[in-house]
Image (cartoon, rainbow, N blue to C red; front, side, top):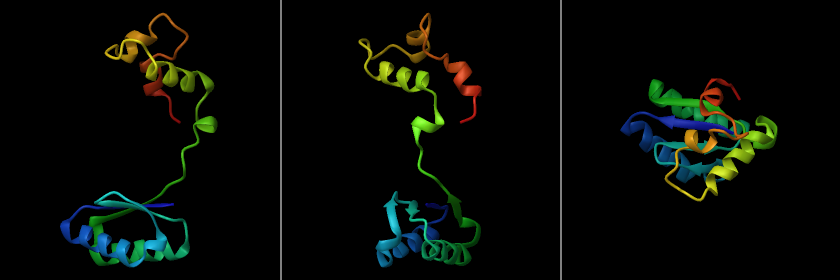
Amino acid sequence: MLLVVTYSAAARTGLRNLCRRHEEAVARRFGRAALLDGTVYAAFLALRLRESYGGDVQIERTEPFNEFVALDERVREAASAYANRDAKSTPYAAFAAGTDHPDPDSMRGDEL
């Protein structure tokens, strides 16, 4: 998939028009950004937009996030346990203290 982000009003208008005219290539719209499908035609549309608006258009290739491949089970279990905690006002660091859940500082330093 391609993520197209716009940084000016003119580029946003261009993206909006592109999305309206080529709905089949658009996976999702977010206002100043859009996810286009991973086809050559979608890449052509994104590049055409960047040619028209230069640096006001950023294009990134993305891939879906699969938490079962990218993360170990401890992190998934910690996220589930924290979402289902009894006291909703407890910050994660206090929730994880003294448990087997990963420490937030160690997770901040680890790349996916």
